[in-house]
Amino acid sequence: MEENSLIQAANRIASTQGLVAFTGAGISEESGIPTFRGNGGLWDRYPPERFANMAGLLGEFFLRPKRVATFLQEILRSCLDAQPNPAHVALAQWEAQGILRAVLTQNIDTLHERAGCSKIIKLHGSIDCLRCTDCGFKQDLDATQMQRWVQVLSPDGIGRRQLWRALRKILSPCPYCGGRRRPDVVFFGDLLPPDAWAEAQQAASLCQILLVIGTSGLVRPAADLPLLAKKAGTILIEINPKPTPLTPLADLYLEGKASEVMKELVERVDSIRR
Ligand code: NAD
Ligand code: ZN
Image 1 (tube, rainbow, N blue to C red):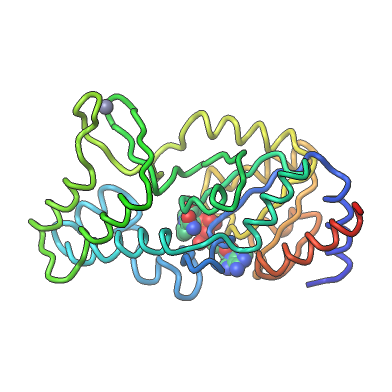
Image 2 (cartoon, helix red, strand yellow; image 1 turned 45 degrees about the horizontal axis):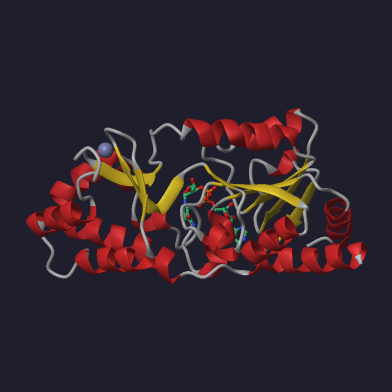
């Protein structure tokens, strides 16, 4: 990581009350949650055309039920087992200090709230929530309920009929209208939740600094947020171990893993503000 860029980033962050963070799967990689892209990423094992959209998943359900159970169980278990890392904690600390206004996240893993952040705009939903497709009622689930899901989805010897039963247990009918429910997460081809998307666009275009952490910048429309910010004259700072399509737009690129760079930044911001 270039020392000069780090100093400049710390100076800018220390003197703002208008920081907004835009986070992707990379911020949670050091918490043990696999990213989609990259070596060992989820997509190496579960191709997105078959696993990241409803139609594909349905096809897999008929052809390879055991694989579907393994996929769902892996995602659930990795989110349940993960703990916030220093990058999530640093953002929560900056929120408490009045530096950070909001986190716009593409992640569904709940690690920002578990780190103590309260102003979170979730662009792709949340793993711990079910939504009724008829009346829109949303229900948050606790860790115990989700642990039960992990058990119900045990892929050992699971066939189509057992998987169907497991899914019916997990996706029980809506308590209000009896309608069908689904996880409140955005699959490929789904629209973003309109309120969250409107709030995120506003936050990105009104902030002074947009700190982009651990996103490939390839998933649209979320990836348009840094472009929107740039157009509005916002300073873009990017943290990522590898350059992305957003890097040429960034005013400062801090090469490295999220937790390592954020630890350095927090120390420097603290010493400037002292
Ligand atoms: P992505 O998987 O497409 O890309 C991950 C990015 O993170 C890459 O640019 C990579 O270089 C970077 N990265 C890897 N390790 C890092 C580290 N330690 N620190 C900082 N950066 C690191 O992720 P995306 O751009 O967020 O898009 C994937 C989509 O999948 C998102 O929409 C998200 O909803 C979803 N997703 C979420 C989770 C989660 O909730 N944790 C995990 C996987 C995928
Ligand atoms: Zn309902």
